[in-house]
Length: 191
Image (cartoon, rainbow, N blue to C red; front, side, top):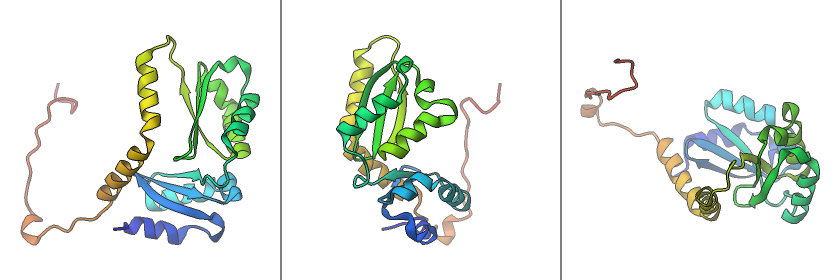
């Protein structure tokens, strides 16, 4: 069952958006586009849709427009300054993301996000910059590898959760005026 939010979003998108897929990922909405122009210049349109629908929306590239992984990796390595301390670059093609693990994430992002935007606009991959652990840890590496290998399951699971979150539930008339009691166990300024 498609949510009315997704239908409303699809109607409000411009014709040149080239959207191939609209899905929930938890409480967020993901748009996959095959239009290079919309991927590069669609920020204002997305911001306007976020204000109208009051939902988080992320624009991702369809794999059809993304540069092949080998060439993209070489190009990214050329764009990032040496002092960033890049430890790893790997791709999540199911999500259209390239993960850049660096000791200095701020250097990878660049002043005003320049390097981030350059990577995004030239490789057509959505960069995700992570801080590399200060001390090499097998546990951190294992967790990141697990998250990387289980993307299909996570994507399906988050879509299911998003549909449940955004489906309107009609309450029977006899249940609409019921009360609940909430007891806070901290974090609500009692102390």
